[in-house]
Image (cartoon, rainbow, N blue to C red):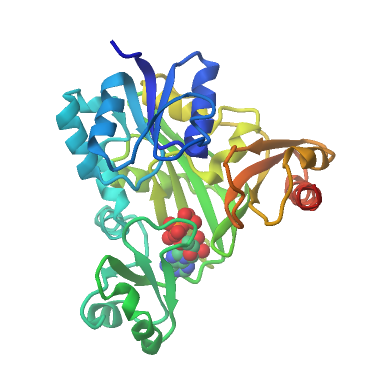
Length: 370
Ligand SMILES: Nc1ncnc2c1ncn2[C@@H]1O[C@H](COP(=O)(O)OP(=O)(O)OP(=O)(O)O)[C@@H](O)[C@H]1O
Ligand SMILES: [Mg+2]
């Protein structure tokens, strides 16, 4: 008889690692599935090495764990359905469910689900043929997106004119791309939403600053976007923890950009804000336990991205911690490729944004020298 686990994660990156850390605090036995060797999750818990689209490997996780969750939205829901057939276990052990994953993982289907439920979101159509539908229904400027698998802006392009659209044709001619309205937003926000049998609600709306399409800084926005964020998660038949990215328009209204069915980079501030963290809330939802009402102190998160050349990060942590109220997090990734999310730091309390920026500068300076 193989060892059993309380909770399984399909994926072994930093989101699985931080969820496992929250679960282990409560004594849960954790398992992750990941194709890599020496991954953030496998460094701290048991793991199965295997491809995330391998239905047999997914079935092994389903069989060996009481509850299972996702680390990303990229595993096709068909593979998970197939894994359930193989494993012959009840589908209710998976949070979020396959149906919600199916609605989210195709960005076009996601937009259509939001629109059907009257949730404000940019209009989108499939890119096909010569792009006629896009030209007629979306117009210029337009945003082009890969329907599946995009992250950190990989899979996002802009076309200001018809010539731009045609220039990009080699990218989208094979199919799998959408065209959507360009939104002239004043800022971007993100809200963590939880929804389960034991209650539903939102963490505060955070402002997010993106640099080169990678989230750079996250801090309190001072506005309430709970209503639209919750409606968005309901529109994709949500169950569990979700990150909702929003655009704030010049008139103060919101549109939904995209939804992630999992803990989210913009929720990392909750690790140090003094209230429940997004990871603990996630574990509670996956296990079917009561949720905690989220409240805490104003906190700013700054992502720590890979730099080359860089030294041993441990030699640079002290430089970041010299700034008061700062907490340091590192994911244990094997290689610090430029632009890769290697860790983050949180600055808690008054002037948190300025302190987070300062601490990060000090860390980068010391890390490059280290
Ligand atoms: N319709 C739009 N109008 C204007 N800007 C947009 C639009 N869609 C996306 N963007 C910009 O591109 C960024 C990346 O887009 P999106 O969030 O859809 O892609 P992603 O690669 O899945 O993102 P992530 O960085 O969250 O992994 C957004 O944060 C926003 O700055
Ligand atoms: Mg995004």
